[in-house]
Length: 349
Image 1 (cartoon, rainbow, N blue to C red):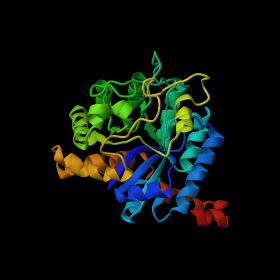
Image 2: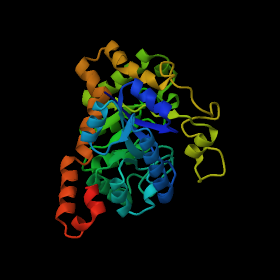
Image 3: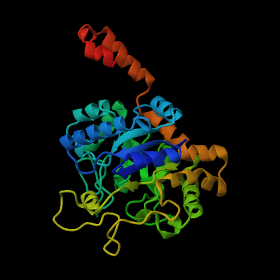
Image 4: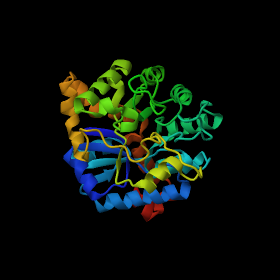
C-alpha cells in the first residue's frame, strides 16, 4: 500500500482509477483553501457525492482501521483535509463539528497570516497565537491532524512543541535541499521528528527544483537526504499533485479574495502558470514507481514500507480517533434514553 499525504484538484473517476492502478491505499484530499464555513460544508457534501458515485473505487476513511479495511478491499481511502483554517471562521466549537463530519486534517495557515499564526510568505512570522494554541489543542482532542505545510517556520516550531499529539508537514521538502519559502529548515524538521511528526516529501516542481524533478532516482535521493535529516520513521510521501486545474483554480489558490493584484504563490513572474510535473510523474499511476525507486537508492524493503505507508499510518494512529471512540459513541446512543428511542440515530450508530 502507498499513502499520499496530500493531493488537490478536481478528482474524477479517471483519477480514482489511476490511484488504484498505482495501489494508492489512501490519499488526503484538499477540500478547500480560502473557503468559509458554508462553502466548506458544500465541499464536503460534494466529496460525499463523488465518493458515493465511485464507491467501487474509493471510500471516505476517518480511522486507521477504516483506511486499512478500505485498502484491503481494493479501493483507495479518501481522507478529508483543508489547507487553511478559514472553514472555522474563528469558532473553536466548529473544530468538533467538522471532525464529526469526517475532516481529519487542517492546515493552520495557508499563504497568509491569520489569527492562528504566521505563514511562510510573511516577512515576519509572528509565531503561534493565543487563538492558534486553543485550536491546536482542540484539534488534538477531536482527532484532527495539525498540518503545517504552508505555515511559517517559527509558527511551525511553536505548533510542534505546543501540540499534545504529533503533527505533520504533509507536503514540503527540506529547505537545505532546495531553498524556498515553502520548505522547512533543518532545525524545524528535527524538532518535528523529535516530537513524532512526519514530513511528506513533495513532487511540486516549484518547491522541489529541477534536479530532483529530473528523474525518479534523483527524487528518491531527495527522500534519502530527508531521511538523513529526520530519521527513517519520520519521512513519507506528500506529492502535492493537482488534478485538472486551470488558470481560475490557480488564481483562487494564490489570490483568493484577499488581493486585487497578482500573487504567484510558490511560482514566479518568470513561470506564473502551472508547473510541469516531474519527468517521472507525468501520469498519476506513476506513483506506483516509487517503491522500486526507493529500493534502487538503497532503502531496504522494511524502510520502503515505512516511507510509502507505515509512517503515515503510525501518525494517523496517534492522532485519529480509534475504534474505541466509535464504540463509545455507539454505546452512548444505545444507553441514552432519548437517543435510544430515535430510530434514525439508533440505526446510524
